[in-house]
Length: 244
Image (cartoon, rainbow, N blue to C red; front, top):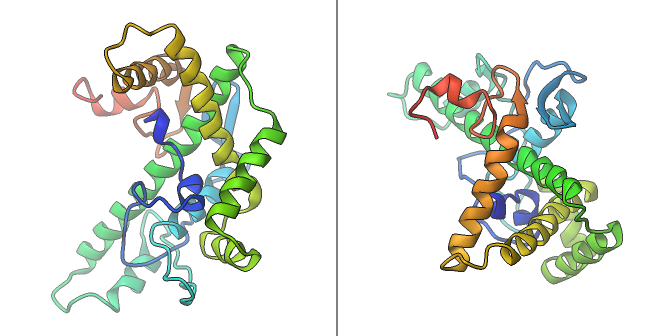
């Protein structure tokens, strides 16, 4: 959903509804060329380096440790074998759990993180592309002001904010990217609402807004094999006519 795209932002504002839960925190490693373009969103490329960076954040924010608790030691998923993840989860698994079952669990968790991260990045670039075409923008000063307001409201001390960055692997630019995405979404939705006042409810307006963005930008989103998610133009071809 366009109006629920924040991963880093959800961590920043302490809203946990979007993150999926698993038993451990892990670092995702994928043998992708750092300079390769894994997804092209209009004129905006998502490179292998960007993908790896955000996948590490996605894995770290699957389950945040308790306040004051130790930061979990990263564990690599290492697709397609997932050997490191299997070895890690084996220690806490029951004796009856097979290696195949552990691998399947690791693969499912990895795919969930990948889907969440690519949805976040792709949607972010959809909104930036749409804002550019509609001549809608938010200034960096506005973004920074909003970011500081949210940081002070949720992390009142420098130490608590450093803790967020440590456990989630997020930099300030990562967090402000999420804040800017949300602000652009709100600005575009406001413009859309002015021309769609006939909708029966706010919820209907938001749904129509989401459909308009998807219908325009999915065909402009080109994803390499193994990086295809529902936001990619290749998704329907991969899943067949029954896919959304």
